[in-house]
Length: 393
Ligand code: SF4
Ligand code: SF4
Image (tube, rainbow, N blue to C red; front, side, top):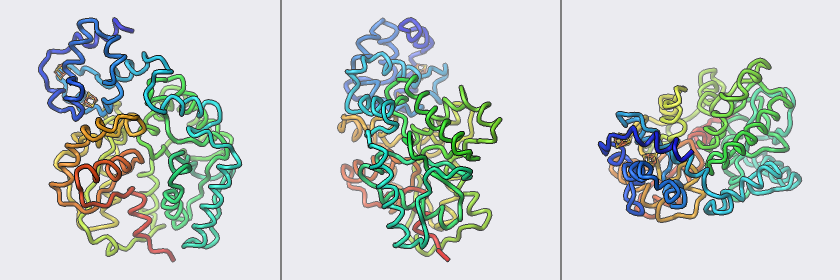
């Protein structure tokens, strides 16, 4: 493994392009080019025990510009994997242990989970969706959706936006009663064995419930971890059973294009911008899969007229600073540092609403960047924008 990393690093021409594009650069006196020099000079262990692998957000912005294609994302993941598990920072490894034991990162027992899901469904029915009942383990539903433990433990009302859109569009969908975690902290900790197991849970649920589509998790890292495993291990088997992977953008576009949901643009008079989550865009493109750049903008255009792009966007977008487990990690100073360029661009755009599609990006921009960089903005999930614009019949 050490030799492999040194071999990759040996391709480096030391041109510095990567360092000029990296939002994490400067932290702890390091930057991508220095990392590669350290690998070439055999300092792999020193790097693996440093915090660099955990503050590099694995955004891939360096890799797409490197003339030699040096893959710093793969290097970062390998360095994370070298860390003894009891030395993984913060609660990430504990979450991995929990998901392997009980099927979710927070160790929630089944009855507690079911109670929250049912209660949130009852509230939604009372608020605006008469007759709504949380669809748990509905065999033969069209779409399978996985909740995020962050929502279950602290922000259960956030689930109502998805559910309201699904209700309005009369979508056939379900959530599983067990092994429901959407997020993939296996990927975040460089533990690809755990990542595969987490993906296996989703696959097993899809087969058991005989769905047609698995919706990739809203957490961009969760969706990317699942996508990696889906492509590598599960796709032929699932496709043979008529089960496919889709993203939330596909579902929202379908509902719009089939005329199943109607929205009122006048509810969104403020200037809107979009933050591209790295792993719904650039990282998919880098893996030769379809990146969801234009779909996000099309969905936003259905809900408002006033839109502005950030100076760096789509393939060139900066990470918000939360990527690859950094949001759940303990290094607040790094989160603030890595998000500064994104914050500057948001401020310069003049946007009052920042829309995004990943739970970690949303939290980082809303809870860290807005506060630290005094941004006068609202931050919304793309499905929240749709839900708040809905005209319910
Ligand atoms: S862009 Fe590529 S070649 Fe240039 S310093 Fe970075 S890794 Fe080396
Ligand atoms: S993946 Fe992103 S954060 Fe990591 S070194 Fe490259 S540009 Fe910097």
